[in-house]
Length: 259
Length: 259
Image (cartoon, rainbow over all chains, first blue to last red):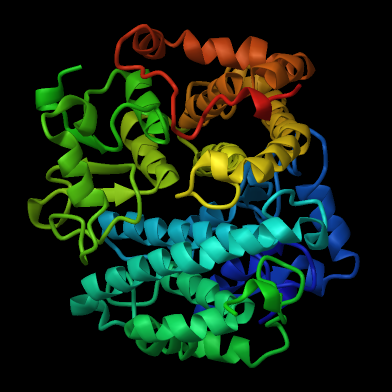
């Protein structure tokens, strides 16, 4: 990566994979340079806060305000040569899918990629809610009883429903994707996004997922390793840029896992 | 509307506005014919179930499976002249935005419309979770204690945060949209989507929203009526096609409202 010449700037919290990870994986898969502003620049998080967390009527450079990070800033891509700032993870993925070649050529395929990615991001949100079911700004410890109930439902009902869906998408596309790609015949951001949520779930619910992976062998034994073996992803996962899970969307509380 | 010749088929549950409403409003705003399959066709819900709720490896006509309705079926738009089926509300809105002229011409504007719509749909999800915080398939009555806590947080912290964001987007765009449109100089699906979530919140939390509307006058006194006055929307809201809220995303439980 060559941060100082990067065309793309990722604006997100420092120190956690979080929702920024779905964006990072798109860049890393294609070996395209980007600046992870909060993690790479001195005072970078001040920039993120100024653009994504201000209470004013614009983010920066004439763009509308941002509700929440991650956001992507692309210098020169906005009106009058200013930067374009876009937010919302699936929106950023749609943008990068077109620019980085992470979508199929046909119109229907582009919508099917986004459809799968949005569903994986819904599962990400539900996973977040297992540790924060009542109030996002309150401590886990203060909503632990509800978290136990929510996690039980997500583990027992929601995770298998989502994994079944991803498995069936993979199987449907087997004639083109050989069970290595979810849509079409090469890597798309549907693959990297589903990979990331599976990876996060393996961290958050190791016992649950150990049991579930046997139910969905193609997902875990074919798609999952295929994404990890993409050269850009392989190099990224071995690098210091890949951050450890801690207090973000994917958290490990043993009591929320299958007992 | 001319259902029998409609190019577009909405596949959703019958009898409720729900998430299908975001799609209906896009069509109605532009006066474009669509078939609301479950509400208009004999045995229509069987069709919706067959396409959106089957456990197989495709929805229909060679399209990948659908995780959950709403879905949009467009006969002839898929591969080899078959139907294209796409799911996920924001994905359908992106598709229709382009086809129906509900997005600005510039690239950045299209992403900003989607950004606002995704955020309004996030608020929709959080509103759903006020009555189902622990388990989507269990009764409200069985998770009422958690619902009271969740609703309190959503009313006190989340709704004002979202309304502040929508207000600031509206203000940012005032030079172009005259506080009648959120992005650009004419109606987009950002406007119809934010209108729908505001309308749903006014139903679900009448006391809370009565207080909040005074804090965000431009949103409620300028944007909200401007959308309702769009000719297609005005006719739709006066028609029998506009369904009453009941047991969908937006529900009225007095105990969850501001006391």
